[in-house]
Each structure stands twice: as structure tokens, then as C-alpha cells.
Image: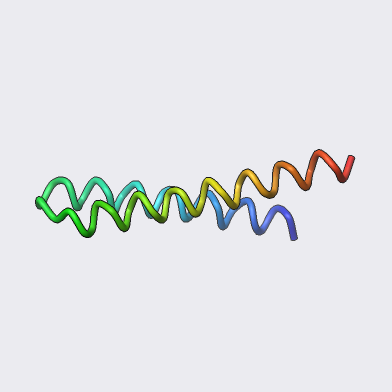
Length: 57
């Protein structure tokens, strides 16, 4: 299950980066902000899973 959550975090990070880049390219500040938010959500998920791994071992 943890691997699934880690993959989900990576997916959110990549999706957010793409959305942020596209938003900047077309000059859409809202899309850029949404992309940054998705990246932050993915970062948080990754951090949570890393902490779980530390306590699991």
C-alpha cells in the first residue's frame, strides 16, 4: 500500500509541474497556482510516506 501512495505522490508532483509550466507558458496565473498546489500536495504525500517508512523499519 505504501508503494501505491508513493507512486500517487510522484504522479501528483509531475502533474502539478506540467500544469504550472503550461500556466506560465500561456500566462494563466490561476493554472500556475493550481500546479504549484498539486506539487505541494504530492510533496506532502511523499514526506508522509517517508516518515512511515522510518517508523516501519
